[in-house]
Amino acid sequence: MKKRPKLRTVDKTSPPFPLNKFSKDFPYILGKEIVYLLASKGRPVLEGDEWEKIFAICIGAEWKPSNVGLDDVVLGNTAWGAKTVKANTSDFRKLKQVRLISGRNSPVYSYGSIIDINSNPNEIGQMVLDIWNERVTSIREKYKNLRTIVLVKSNDLTQLAVFEFDTIRYDFELFDFKWNRNGNLEGYLKNSTKKKFTWQPHGSQFTITEQVPKNTLVVKLKKPENLDKAEILKAIGFDNSWVVIQK
Image (cartoon, rainbow, N blue to C red; front, side, top):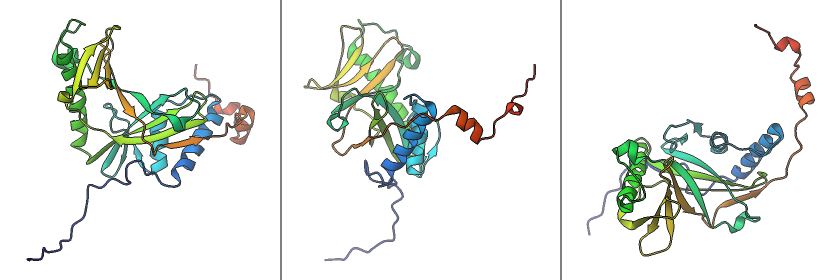
């Protein structure tokens, strides 16, 4: 049998780390950033762009806010879109699925279509998915690997769950769409009751339901005391000379 030659090859498409395999330092960096946010803000509010920046810090990546929202964080040949969602369950280890806002997909804007609940649901569903797929394709032309990083948060930010998944295109042929009684469009996996998509005609909001992986990172944090405003101002040497009245 003829022996195959060994070649010098370099895999240039591998992501920086396997899916959902964060470094051992990741939870501690995440915890430190969230605790600092709680102490400095004085209230449990974490906006989407703050999560993007925190995740970038956690993995040593670059934060690059994107209009598309699929490549807000970049490290080498991998890009992430970052999502946050609240959960009211008392134990995040029992999370099963989350519903993620995934952009505004407007067939009216993209195709010039007129849409109401009398429109063929599968025709509208295909348009909505095509818009999503086109976004994914445009980003994958720039990055070999594309993922979504999700932060599930409790109301007080003391319980967190973090997981990621590959950001993919969806094959319209695998889904059936129908209008619900609220006038929203829902997409179900064919021959099942598993709902994957929801699209709202008013505002064009598109949401995707994702399953929470079994190996999701779950973290509980100690709530810090609020930082004392007077002490902070004293520490940085603030006085009235920092304020210049111009008019």
